Length: 254
Image (cartoon, rainbow, N blue to C red; front, side, top):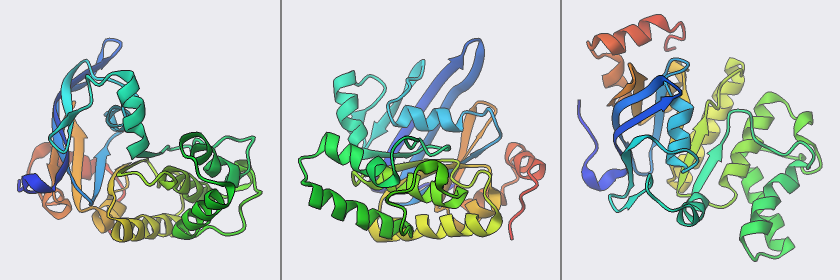
């Protein structure tokens, strides 16, 4: 399959191997992610989609293999102090939101700005307003996370992931459990942010229709390795592993 040219590659993953207990998750997984585009990682449950994101974010390490950023920085052997600094360039939208239940939404977004910047409270408020506007949220400052609808929770989690202006945005199953209308809403927010800010986005999903609508690049995790390509190219492939995945998934493109 065709691949983006070298200067357009933001992340390169080489020969990852990882076991959870005695169960192999990755056995020689290699793939790339283009700069400034939306890449979607597909795969059945248990294929390691969330694990891959955690490794890119330096929250987990493989047993072996390499993860390169811009062909210059290798993440798997990075010391913890350096990894902690690198994580500031990564925005992570966790599947369950990862907002602190005891804090209002405003303070959830303010927390990393207060911890990692010297901005004044007025500057922090302006940054939060900008993030709320970017994700289409209004009048949620004083609401607790538990008071938000599913779609509002995802957008609040997205705003939280964007608050430190990351170079790479990782979104773990942002469409899981949402109704079709809300899926389209979250899609449109992600597409608009990508177009406006040019952030490299890596989104895990099992939602095929959404993937074909929004992805510029697709990585399919299957049989403990990865198959990559442009979405239409991958969907039309004759590779038995790819055909089996799409045939077994009931979420057909619309």
